[in-house]
Length: 379
Ligand SMILES: C[S@@+](CC[C@H](N)C(=O)[O-])C[C@H]1O[C@@H](n2cnc3c(N)ncnc32)[C@H](O)[C@@H]1O
Image (cartoon, rainbow, N blue to C red):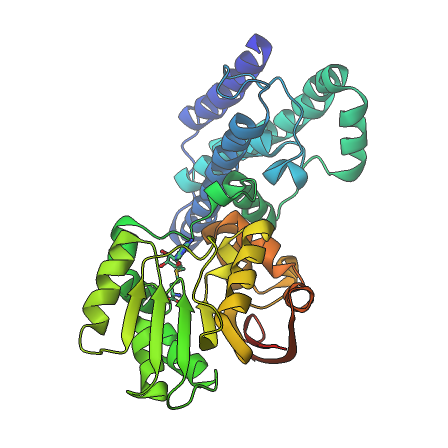
């Protein structure tokens, strides 16, 4: 460790000294180009250093939070993409700063410093690591390159930092606090108003008709219930099943004007008693937040609540390859969504529904196939 610190101190000090002894500065247009390049390299170096530092802290300690020096092998997050992201970051930083300064001496010296850093890592440090971690590390070396200049590695690194086991307690499906209080506004804001139009269209696609009785599982703020009422009229009925405090308050507020929108303060993962009462059970962006076991309980509840021939309408993520999805979906699922969402996307929901007594499927997709309204009949 001491040797490493001395090495990096020499690298940084020599770049600084080179800049102090040279007064050739790149100015004008070329200086501007170097500055922009320097800003990009500096930001990239800082991001690499930060992400790899956090990744080591999260995955490379036998005892979480034990000391600074890693004592456990990891190939998680950014370390699944390259073997030495931290050193790449620390090595690139003086180069980025030198480009920002426009000082020729610093730029030339930082190039050598970077080469020296690579040599140090591969020739001095890596043999030590092989000795510590043995065959695991040798196998890893065969699969993963030492350095990789690729923004996707930063992305993978970010996802690694967010990675949590797909357990119910890590789910974000029970929306609470400020997020719950401003849920509708937030949804409209982060989707630039798209969600408002989309949810109206999707509810229109369920096929509700005058007089239908609907159970809305995880009803949220009541926005969906009010939209559904436009289709079922005053002779139908909507029962929203909701347990979130802030959501229940908004549901009651929004549905105040309608006698046929009711709130059931019941959890959809507990057995529900209202048997064979409903024509439709609707569940919108809720099912992906539950584990396989809880999903089955919810599907069972939907089955029990529906009349024979009734429809279970699931509006949620479709099945798709998250790794190959456009950046916006990949980032949304891997970074913003709860860890259960990806598992849901990889699950054959129709098969599970079939096993639990549903059939006659119909589906409609939105957003280039990434969102689906799946309708299944109780047969
Ligand atoms: C992502 S929000 C979706 C809300 C609404 N369906 C929509 O499309 O706007 C998930 C909702 O499910 C509710 N929820 C979570 N777990 C629940 C449970 N066990 N029983 C009933 N509702 C639940 C949350 O309180 C939250 O309102």
